[in-house]
Image 1 (cartoon, helix red, strand yellow):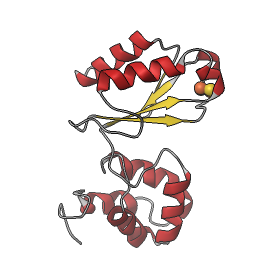
Image 2 (cartoon, protein in one colour; image 1 turned 45 degrees about the vertical axis):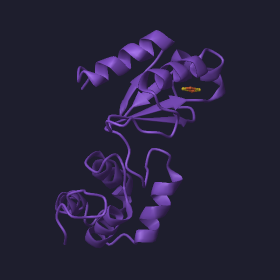
Image 3 (tube, rainbow, N blue to C red; image 1 turned 90 degrees about the horizontal axis):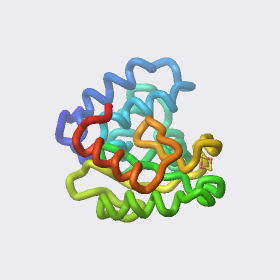
Image 4 (cartoon, protein in one colour; image 1 turned 180 degrees about the horizontal axis):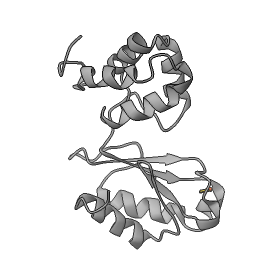
Amino acid sequence: MQNQCSASSVDLTQIAAIAARYKNEPDQLMRILFDVQKIASNAIPRDVAAVVSGVTGIPEANIYSFITFYAMFSTKPRGKYVVRMCKSAPCHVVGAAEVAAAIGDFLGIAPGETTSDGLFTLEFCECIGLCDTSPAIMVNDSVYTNLTPQAAVNLMQAYQKGGVQ
Ligand code: FES
């Protein structure tokens, strides 16, 4: 197995070690992919999926289906922080578009793009279940609600400064 020389520049030995924790638990594929994605540029490219498949015995086609079905996974490398802006109606009517525009303007990227420093990727997503406190976004696993455009920019600044864990 290659180490640090894969097409995705990910340490495949580390990927294999994570997958090995769930070796006989194919029903834990979601958990495996979440854990793997965290150390693989917020993505699961083909070589990473192949390692997961080889270690767990889960067919690569099943893994690929999973990755392409669930929006929280990606085959393409993303930023350290994946900002996911809810675009569903309840968020939209209370200003989600303005929040998204403020984030995009501040970061200098459009949805689907990654900042040149590799820090942020901006994405739209469907409802994340926080409609009663919308507009809402996720940054990796963390949720932020009741956002205004300025609050969203302040949040991005805090992430830039490394002040958010
Ligand atoms: S519509 Fe945005 S969180 Fe539900």
